[in-house]
Image (cartoon, rainbow, N blue to C red; front, side, top):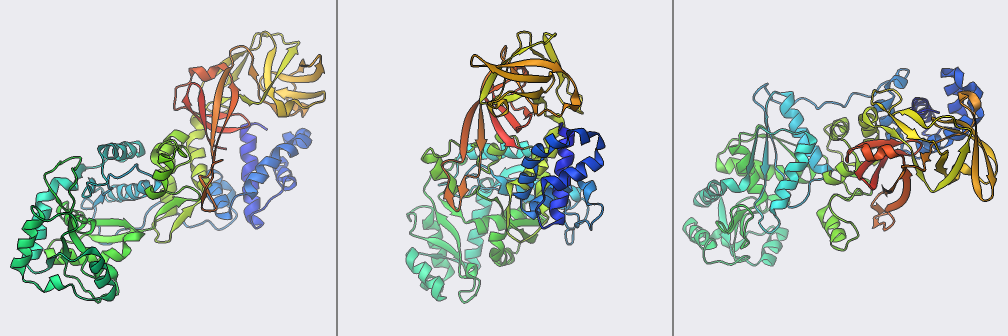
Length: 568
């Protein structure tokens, strides 16, 4: 089958699997395929073998993944069944008016951006565009112990790659004077106090819903303590706490921390401050100062919405509308820095661009397109249900995104040399894409010496269709595999095989990433490498080009000597 015929067969397999509980069979698929393409009937016996891997792949998918691929790559095959509700857009915002919506994406620069960051950034970007509004990028950098300049840069590079354009870029640390002034104001108004209790006692009091002894002191005492936090107290000696509700069933409201002492040099403002706001306090103040109208957070912060609102009420500042959405992770690809960092430190994972990771650097290196990520995120909709998506769903989006621009090349792993006689030309000219205008290339065959996969050579004599060359009869003699050119009859029914010439072929390493974790445990076999030969045209391709190796899958050219497997 050529690529278009294989694509049609996969669409049939997906459609049939969904109609029969997620499973299909080669016999059913070939029957339907021949009904649509009767010209293939003479090749029916050979096609059965080619359909096996397609149906096995489809049967290995979940029904949700089957449907997602059918919707994205073969929507015409859903015409006879009720269509799923479109999820490509986002639900309307309450109280939103065109031209007045302001959203924000506030990442902390404490690591490299991952698929979860992409989801949050895309949602904020899409809502700003939907209402002809503005989206602000604000680095939430109020924990100098965790932040580095490289992380600011890595986040910005990742967001630029995603194609997100922000109306403005700022840092929370830019507003430290204003934030500290607002904190002092709460103390003066009696809405916050400085606590000098030991951390264990603070935790115990919150668990037991008992008021802190420090909360009973007067405002002047707390203002004196506030001044000492910037000069005399050491880290851990004092914190500023909000006067919330110690008997609240929402634990975040039990006099939470608003400021703490951190004696670490900040990557941007150096040693200018040692009293730093908590995330809860800083994000509330900054959202109001920045004119944010609609603030979105991941679901893990849902219980903190009450504190967000209470703080802005106490500060007498404008309140944005608040909503939460689910976190996004892939099966077997954790996003947590607490999981990833130890793997990098132990050299189990090379770096944040390791193609097994869900970081944006890793996605780019693997060959995933940013437009595919955006379409994937929007297809999930705005939901609070936790999303543990199969990576295959993103792959189906990416396949559609890269197919039209991916040149088709021959690659041979585990090669066997064949000496072909009877060829009457010096080179074979082939199109770089079966349907798109990506040019062509000429592959030298003057000496008749080529490599084919060992799995296709077999041990006995036989016949093959070498793509672009034609039918050859194979035989062995003197330990050498020989081939005799027969003709270029497309209807021969012989197995179709890719090949590379001995002259000019390039040796590369193909890196194949698999799920990093299986059953909750790190899989040391999750990254494999194998040697392969590619045709000479590989050398002419730019690095970062995604190609489709015929009968293998899509790969990204990482360097002249390395390809990284993207997906089938």
